Structures are given as structure tokens and as C-alpha cells.
Length: 361
Image (cartoon, rainbow, N blue to C red; front, side, top):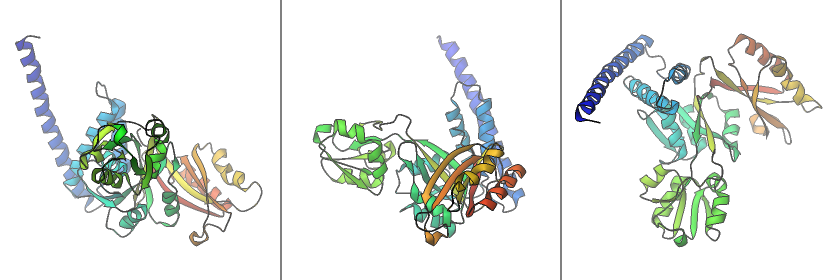
């Protein structure tokens, strides 16, 4: 390519950058006008942002992938929101965890991310107003449901207002650069489970030690000779560790689903799902009868899972079960509301945990 052609292409890029700056500034100014029009109403609207993301992903002409378009769009929306309000989002800390990555993926960088000591504290932060929202893990494709999150939802007034799907890439990190020097591996119990086959093959004699979080694992690996940790590349950067081996998870499609929790229900986005918790009477065929209204209405279920009920939650006694159901639709849809009334009449109890936009992923 000759110099004149290169200069011409760069001039076109400069012109597009100037146009981009003008357009994004105009968008921010309009967002401020929207905020003033709301007159103190909620700045973050999960259903509205989901609609914008879905529309632009569908309209994406390339060559950038849809995931990149969504990332740029969410960062733009995050910066525009911050002009009106600093949103505080609680997550399972400390810094460097996959939960923090999920927060940034969904809300963007222009927020105040609050690291909490455990999932209970994430719920409490929103329930008491210390945070506007919380992002908590609910399910891993390899290890299954995060039962503490499911149990807390039964007693909490919070609503599920969104979901985040985060690909989980586990890295082995250490001060040392070779496997032969490692005698211990720290990691969260789920991370150790997600990498158990790789660890058995490559570090069969190393002690595997579960800790409260992968960030705690990284902190220990940084301080103790001969040790390594599992976790994200972000944690490696925070604790000045070397990535000895990347993407060592046993399942290449390893993904964790996170719920976004808030105090105000999300409005319909047009492509929603609803999470329910219900109890069936202790009698033959009760579960089938409980779910029959969903089947009769043609409502698709994407998940059905049972959890032992606990008496203090008012959900039953010993050896009785709570069924967690995820199905298509929004609780405010008239036809869906009729079905819920039918289920409620058959159930020992029914709680709608939330209706929320389906993740674009």
C-alpha cells in the first residue's frame, strides 16, 4: 500500500472518530434529559438496556463480533448512567473474582463495585440499601447450582431482574514459572472441582487446598513459596503472579450463570424468563399436577430442580422439597398470570423469584 492510500484511509478513520465523539456526546446529553424527565425515578432499567443490546446485536453488520458490540454498548450506557447516578453493585469479593467480572460485563466500568465477604452479605447490602443491586452466582455448567443463592432467595424480598452468563476460564498462577516447583494449589472449591482432571494429570502430588475465594488463593500463592492458585487472569494481575498454565478447566464450555438482584421488579422486555419456587403437597402425583398448568399453556421450562425445604423458611418440614422452576415468559403477561394463579391454587406455596430479560448470550 502506498503512502497516499494509507493517508486516505487514516483520514477516513479520523473523520469517523470525530463523528463517533459527536454522536456519543449527543447520546449522553439525551440520557441526561431522560434522567431529568424521570424526576428521580430509577436510572437503571434492565428491560430497556436488554432491548437495546438485543436490537443492535441483531443489526450488527460485522466485522466486529456481537460480543464486542455488546461490550462497547454496555460501557457507553454505563458512562451515560453515571452522569445521573453512581450505581453501587455488591458482589462476592474480594477483587479479582469471577463475580467481579460478571458485574463489569453487565453494568460496565462506570459504577461503584462493592466487594462482600459472602453471598449472604451481597443480599444484605441490597436489602438494607447499602447497594442498589447485587450480582450473585446461581449455577455453573460443570458443578451445578449454587445452593446458598437458591436458599436465600426463598426468604429475601429481592427480585431477580437480570442474568449474566460468564465463560469461566481457570488459570494456574504462581510466582514460579514451572510446574515441578509447585507443592500446593489453592482455589475456591468450585474452581478445584472444575479443574480436577487437569490437576490430577499435571500436578498429581500437589496438595489441593480449598479457600473462600480465588482471590484469597492468589493472595496466598503470592506470599507462600512453592504454591499456586486457580482463578482469573485479573487476579494474576492484582497479585503479581505469572500464569503458569491458561484455560485448564476440564470443560471448554464451562460457564457460570449469575443473577442480578434488585428491590424493584423488571418490566417486560419482550424476551423474558421467570424463576419460581414452589412446594407440592405431600401426596402421590402432586408434582405432575403442580406443573400441568405450564404444560397445558405451552410454556417451556428450561430448568426444574428440587431442594430440601427448611421449616424456618415456611416452605415445609423435613423430607419435603422446594422445586425451583425457570420458564419462558414474564409474570405480568396476562396469559402467564392466569397460569400462575392456577399453579398457586395447586401448590403448598408459590413464590415468584423474579421475571427478567433473557441474556443475549
